[in-house]
Image (cartoon, rainbow, N blue to C red; front, side, top):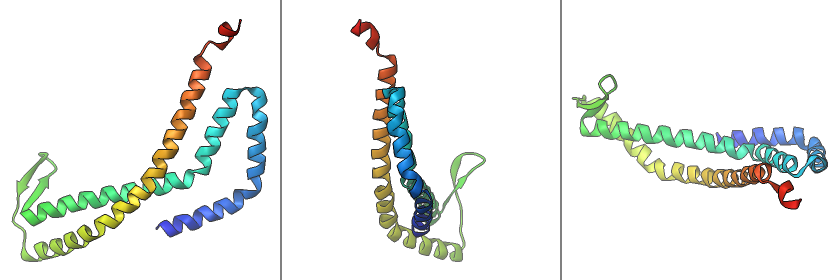
Length: 155
């Protein structure tokens, strides 16, 4: 799944590569309109350039969440319990031998795969959080520049 995402990003990057110098020049020339517009465009360009990180983080977060929920459900199956959705509680349940055997096999498989998928989740979570922190700092800078009374201090 991630290899397919990398291939898609490579195709998009090759299509957009001729326009990248134009985008950088546009951002540089926007400095004429003011510092806040320049910073805002840099933030937008950063979000476009790190779109693949956001997509990979979303995919890995969804997979990690699904795997965690399935492990919880299989753990309840292993203990002879099931979740009652209508009443919002966990009830006792008698499972057949085939259901327990299949559940135990799936539980074992997912438990051994969990560290690998968790590392992939962390691999994409850390850059996503770093980009989010950088964008938050840029937004705070723009907000400070827009609301700080520089003109009254200069005069």
